[in-house]
Image 1 (cartoon, rainbow over the protein chains, first blue to last red):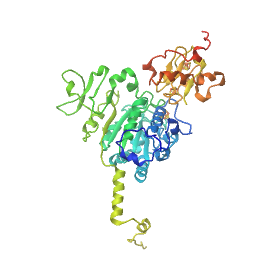
Image 2 (image 1 turned 90 degrees about the vertical axis):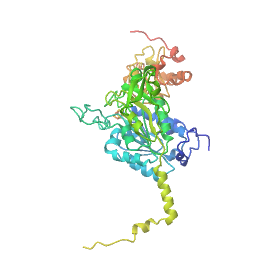
Image 3 (image 1 turned 135 degrees about the vertical axis):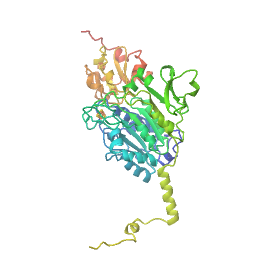
Image 4 (image 1 turned 180 degrees about the vertical axis):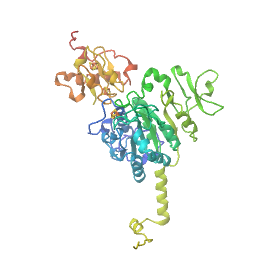
Length: 359
Length: 107
Ligand code: SF4
Ligand code: SF4
Ligand code: SF4
């Protein structure tokens, strides 16, 4: 063993179950020999680089890391990671990853999915993984379009969006993945942006440190079919007024000279964006990602305008500790063995309660 | 590994590449543009838009411009990682290989 582990956070005791790397790792160790086949300029490259750059920090044995994906552009991700991986079935990555994480607790299991894969065909699997709190890290690349199938509207596309499948504009109200995850009882929910390497890496770090399901929504530019979808958050000037950086324990302020802030309306209980004055400064909401109640985190997720993206919070919305499915299941199995002895699968299958169907 | 910018960019710098880069890692030097080797995510968006065909993957730089294989990496050895060319502004000096290149005739 070497001192490969530079990871200092101790939040995720479950990481101790995963064997450590024998030597110090670098980003190169996590690059596979596969040619990366996203369109030139795709935001996926930036996310891949950030994940490959972050992995050495965890210092886990590569053989004990798994990336499971579904179907879509983002789901090519496992090919490019020099770890185990599975390019699985459309929308089913959370289900497959749940099986892996619960049966092999010596693995660090990551899910890579997109807005189509996770929120359309896979919506059901996603919400159940979240409510169970399986020890998975889910990276949801949101580009608000179907890229792989060449540009149809997705479950996160804005109302009125003109695409190949919505020539007169989309009629569907979009999902907000952060709101959805909080509503599905997620214990860790964050949002970040493909091109902000530092913020993305910091968010990965916090997610890895979380015991249970961590969902990170990553705003990702599809420069071919939905170019500039997040420019309002990326342009340095505009971002001053559009982006809200959430930091646990800090007052939620933003804008040039931090003159804007988030305040709770005492009459309605809802949150609103205000200009900070000497009069209201003391009342500006302080972000509490650890709050047991999801109410304020949910209200924060509703601040952003889905069309203009004004007042989009990024960072960790919610980060609470609650029982982890894998641990609870392992405990239950131990209890069953204690009480009833080791099971006999063959005997169980043959059973005692059989019958014959006669014609 | 990353993309690098070779001799044809020197004294041209039309910056067509800059607008394509999703992570803003193409920095301006006095005579040439430079790609930050650690910030570049290998997305390949800059390479086809360069009118001078000056951009190459590090291990595919033509032999005639061999010296340019490492100019970009070395120039940032002192600068570090500013995380964004737009806010960092231009680099104060060129790499010696670039500074010593013959001045391109205008026109
Ligand atoms: S279609 Fe869009 S999301 Fe898919 S690889 Fe190309 S740029 Fe990326
Ligand atoms: S596009 Fe080519 S010539 Fe123009 S600045 Fe970029 S590297 Fe230089
Ligand atoms: S390859 Fe992509 S990330 Fe690298 S410099 Fe070119 S455009 Fe920027």
